[in-house]
Length: 312
Image (cartoon, rainbow, N blue to C red):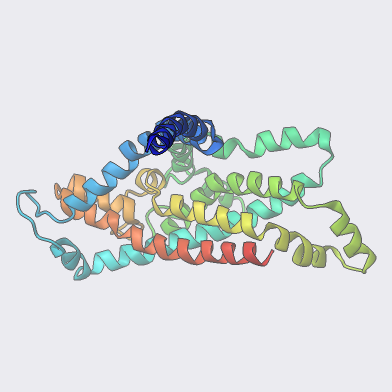
């Protein structure tokens, strides 16, 4: 009996000794330290991103006076409006076209900078990043002057070739072209710097092996460069697609959605409906419609990235 009591006492003391030791082990893990270091950022994201997102969902279920719950009533109302579907189409065209040309131009410019001697690369990188560094609202004001119907620098230049004048922001086609052009000018440097970093990580031995096999410059790009950069191309395109879909300042400053709502995208039309039209719940519903479109794009792109990662 005494032996049993002694053994029980030893077990209790061992359990008490293990608790502090296990606590020290948990606190000493790198994952635990990393969690506590990132906790302020997690809380900040929850405060600035998650709370507004949840609140916008709540607003989208209310009526115009925000006094009555209407469920999906705002979405059903939007689905019956031709302007809404026009905004959906224009937003998709605006985002896909701009991202495609930003990726293409960024890829070409990145190759140009990559092939420059190391001493000159810093200067070119600095100059080519200027459009991306300048605040979009400020640079868009400069473009607004370039597109001005009376004092357009573009029309003045084209007049020497007997072309124009072009109503850049008053014609439907040219207005769409103008907002896409400015977005490409602003976003292409981001693609350039991302692709340039990816090009630096491609081993030179692969190009040497391709040259030995008789590959020309196009075959090197197609069979060596692009496969090695596929993941960074996909992730960069996804990030830019999200930012471009949510773009507000370029369209707002250049056209304010005109002429006749022909250049409105989700963000600007949500502002017009919600703020200028004093219908906050309907504006929240417009902005929330971006979520399923971007979610589908993100699923396809990230699934492809994950698939290639598993194959590697």
